[in-house]
Image (cartoon, rainbow, N blue to C red; front, side, top):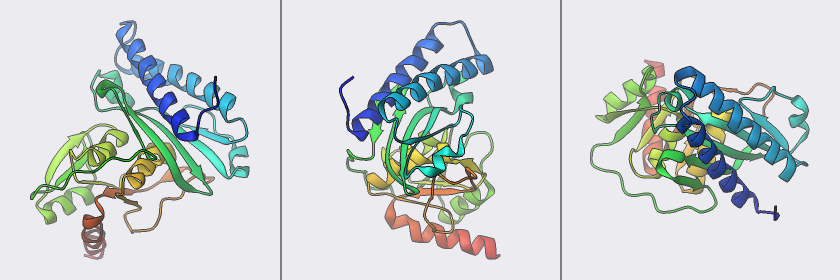
Length: 248
C-alpha cells in the first residue's frame, strides 16, 4: 500500500471499516447484540492490523483491544472505536459511527469519523462550512439515558431535544449543521470522543470538558467524564449555565 498522509489514512480506514461493518450486517447471520459483537470484533481486527502495518512507530488504543500502557511512551497515539454505538449498529439503525483519531502529546490533532449508512467520512483536516444556527437551538442527547445536566441546560436555553445514538453521530450532527449543542456528562472513554473532538475542532467548533478545560488524551486512565461540542458562539453561555446549575 502506498504511504498515505495521516488524514488520508484515517479516512481510508474509517471508510473501509464502515463497508466491512455494513457487509457483516447485510450478511444476515447475526442480529441484535450478536451483530454488535461480530461487527466490533471484525472491524477492530482490520483497523488494528492496518494501523500496526502503516504506523508501527505510533501507539494504539482501541476500545476492543486489551490496553497496553506501552502507548504512554509514544507522543503520537491512534485512538480507535471500531463501532461507536454498538447498540444502534446491532439494531440496524443509522446513528452509529467509526472513529479514527490521532492524539499527539495528548491533544486530538487529527480525526476521521465515518457515518457508514450516510456514506460519509468527515475529516478534521478537510473542514467545510458549518451552517448558521436556527433561532431555536437544538441539543442532541442520548436516546436512552439523557444526562441531567444536558436536560437542565436545554431547558434554560429553550432548546429542542434531539435524541440520538452514538457519540460520533451526535458530534457530527453539530458539524453537519443538523444540531447545535452536544453536552454529555454521563461518562465516556477516550475512544468515544477523540476523533469526533478532532473533527469538531478542525471545523472551527468548540470542544472541551464541561468546565471549559481542554480534552486530553492518551492518559493512563482512559475514562473521560464529560464533553461539550458546540459552535464557538454558544460555548460561553453553555459553560456558564453548567457552572450555575452545579452551584445551585
